[in-house]
Amino acid sequence: MALAETEPMTDTKAAKPQSYWAGVGARVVRDPVSMICLAVVLLLILSAIFAPYIGLPDPYKGSMIARLKPLGTEGHLLGTDEQGRDMLARLIYGGRLTLFIGLMPVVFAFFIGSALGIVAGYVGGMTNTIIMRIVDVFFAFPSVLLAIAISGALGAGIVNSLVSLTIVFIPPITRVAEAVTSGVRALDYIDAARATGANALTVIRVHVIGNVLSPIFVYATSLTSVCMILAAGLSFLGIGVRPPEPEWGLMLNTLRSAIYINPWLSALPGVMIFVTSLCLNLLSDGLRSAMNVRD
Amino acid sequence: MLSYFLRRLILVLPVAFGVSVICFLLVQIAPGDPLTAIMPVDATAEEQAAMRAAYGLDKPLPIQYAIWIGNLAQGDMGKSIATGRPVAQEVFGAVQNSLLLAVSAAVIAFPIGIFLGFLAGYFRDTLLDRAVTALSITGVSVPNYWLGIVLVIIFSVNLGWLPSMGAGPGGSQSWAWDWLHMRHLILPAVTLAVVPIGIVARTVRALAGDILTMDFVQALYAKGMSRGDVLRHVARNAAATALSVMGLQLGYLLGGSILIETVFNWPGSGFLLSNAIFQRDLPLLQGTILILALFFVAMNLIVDVAQAAIDPRIKRT
Image 1 (cartoon, chains in turn purple, red):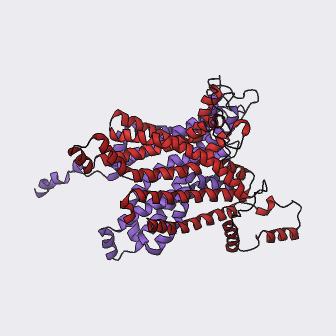
Image 2 (tube, rainbow over the protein chains, first blue to last red):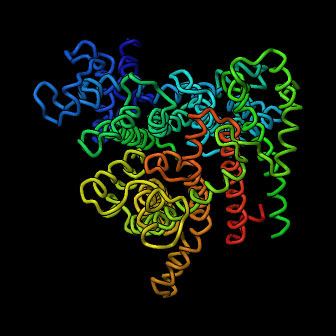
Image 3 (cartoon, rainbow over the protein chains, first blue to last red):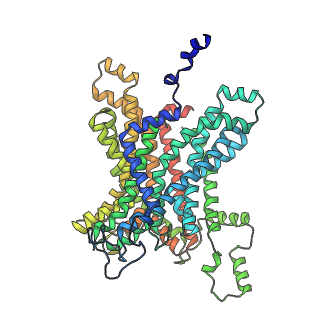
């Protein structure tokens, strides 16, 4: 009998508190702008990954007689580039390198910058001073200048672009991570955890990371759009991806010679960069308001 | 005020030192021997060693840095490998052109950004606010080097109204305040202005929105002050923050105009930089970046001090 009486008490599924991330997810899903942007970004990523399997022409195969065909040419829906290569294929294949070089530096910088910032913020003292003063120095360079300086010195190449852009985005992420961590570090529960005798690593792992990662993450997502534009910009300058690889920035550069012959065709790769960066920005804004994190 | 300025100046020195170290290291991370660019291919080992000693390249890095910074203090930034001219001379000529472009872009961007941002902040959550917000997010998302190309397609290729390249008629390098030269400035300046318009509008919108909901605004209205006078108070409150954002933007405009200068063949520091990169002219690369970064540091210092001059709350902290 006693069991039967307690039964309604255990059946509290409906009132179970929603987890934080589930709440964020639900709010993002309810926001139409975020969902459209997410769909566009996913479509671009998927089409880039599966480019070889969706029946596109060879993006490297040119034709001397079919150069700079206009949009809507038979067999070439978006025309052909200055070497007669199919534009649609190159734009879709171009997403592979552009998105990879445009997004990965932020991912790398997120891990490295978070680690540095959390250590600086948690340990404080001399460690903090050394890390943060070095970060300050990097803030003396506008991001475009720093990316071009490092890439210019290292030379063109995919790895060099990844390295230079990662270096560009570590300092801002470190600064945010340090600020958030310092704030959390001052809270009572950290003192309580330390009083139990837990060492620094344990406290950081159990009590700090969970509380600082989401604001750092949101901040990092707001950098993806800038990173995309910069990555394509490096290739546009000729210090990123090398020809003949399809990459939006590089395509924009090589097609510049065609702006008097087939102007709108030559602007196409930029449309891809623009749409992607716009979607990344809107998505980051949506995520920010869903997580209710203020900057 | 003077003591605040001096305090800020002292804080800037370590940053300036760090900037010089990074610029020095840029040449070290470059692949290949810096000598290969200047030595004949068939130079013997002794000749190479002699050259190495002559350039101080046989000394340890900290000594090399000390020599470099010592020369720098005397205004000697080395010679360009490509042209053989002093780096300082090349850089300062180009920086003037970049500055002209950056300031023109700022003159276009800041009033428009402030106006739009204020409208959006004042008419919060109206259609106007949403339009401005959409515009500013578009502004910050657009790859401006692509926008430059699109503007060239519209205004140079299709309409033929404005020139697409250079800073003056016939590839002229010297600037003059006449229409022939000004025409060349319009497209690059407008292109460069788009991103800061978005950023300034966004900032001012948030500022105006926040300040308008403060109690003192209510109090001013309550005592019967006219709307115009209240807005003057609001503007004064927003000025310091808005100013710092705009100061930073001006710095970004100078450092970030590299891509735009490439699009429009504008003979500024960015153009110089891309030439330096392709000719592997490392002294020129180093010098240009150093000057641009130091300019940015100085800009931040000026902004900090100006902010303190406007807003007495800042000086006390």
